[in-house]
Amino acid sequence: MIHDPQHTISTLSVLAPGGLALTFADGVTLRVDLTAVAKAYPALAPLQDPTLFATARVDALGGYVVWVDDELEMAADNLRNLALEQSGGIGPERVLNWMARHALTQERAAQAIGVSRRMLNYYLSGAKPIPKTVWLACLGWETLQGNERLALAA
Image (cartoon, rainbow, N blue to C red):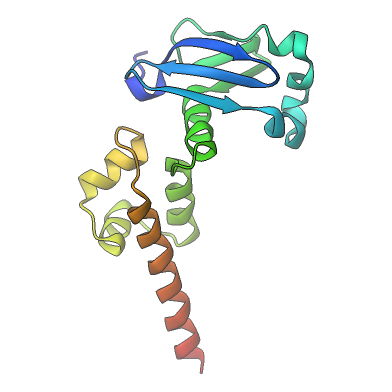
């Protein structure tokens, strides 16, 4: 199985406590802090153990960071999204969740925020970073939809 370069981890370094520096196959290096995630999700609670956390490694295909085979791992796309969000960027999951909240197809979402469907696909796949203006367009569209519903109800 071949992964997309933006979702394939080529190297990682463990940063104490609870952090990772990840370099992806597209050349981007990001830092992610998993401290809050390990506290928030019971399945990841074992990552609070510094000895276990230090055993982090990349799986053979670069699609996961693994601590315990088949039991404790995190996917590259989730780690990249989290790292982007922690660094002040906009991760693809935020836009995907916006689309799901409003039951938007990719075509309708692209029209709503004024981008081509192809560009939206680049953003959603992580192939291109999501500009803050695109996220602001999502929020603006959402606000307009809410205002229109209020006006119709009045």
